[in-house]
Amino acid sequence: MSEDNKIGLLDSGVGGLSVLSELYKIMPNGNYVFFGDTKNVPYGTKTPEEIFNCTKKILEFFISKNIKTAVFACNTTSAVAYDRLKEHFKNEIKIYPLIQSVAKYSIDGLKDNDTIAVLATKATINSKKYEKEIKKYNPNINVVGIDCTGFVEIVENRLYNDQEALSLIKSKLDFAKENNAKRIVLGCTHYPYLTNIFKNILDVEYFNPAQNIAQIVKNDIKSNSTNGSLDFYVSKNPQEFILSAKTFFDVKECKLHEI
Ligand code: DGL
Image 1: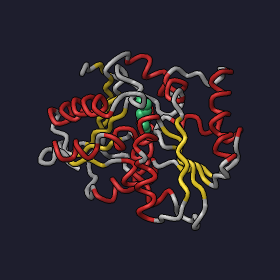
Image 2: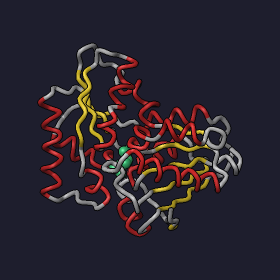
Image 3: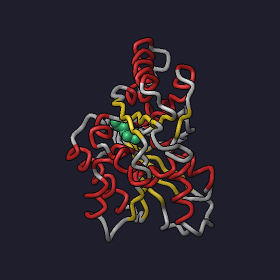
Image 4: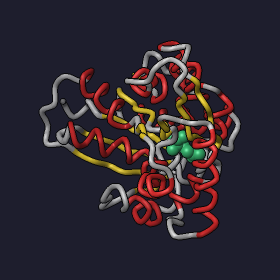
């Protein structure tokens, strides 16, 4: 991978690090630029137009840094803005969307009439993107979408011991249980930070799309021969980002870039 073959990963905040960490594990020599849009987090309660505009600015920033490959380490952006952005930037940057890339793997081993629950942001659930993509591979799987508004704030603000936060999480998992979900998709990249809490409440299979998207990107990007680099940018509060990231990724330095 030459210096100009950088990979830009984007998310509204620390969630995208759950994808970066998988990519970094299997491609430690890659040159990565991560952008967390902490000024605009959460994306999940914004309109598709607002999400499109935020993501467009991040892609313009990537393009200004000569980045040719972008990974949407964000389900919400993949759900509501990918199609337009792909068209808009078709000659400038290749984009890997999350949901569209992993839907097929999320139902591996499931049978007709099995139920899969998708925990995701309001915008992702409203888009029904997981359901549409999963049904392309098996129309007989039941897909139950659960709007988990509030989970992103729990992660961004590290509210892991907050009682209100824990009862919100429990209420969403209870709903998955009532629907006999055999598997739960972590349909927002912030949710892998909550996996231990989830597992303590409900003992089912959890599907984290991060590994699959990382593998897909690695398979496409053949050469991998530099020393590697990691650059982090956020649109607000770099120090907060470093603190919240810690559970998942040890970010040493993070720069502020307003969009
Ligand atoms: N982590 C992102 C996702 O996967 C965005 C969450 C948000 O900002 O609402 O959907």
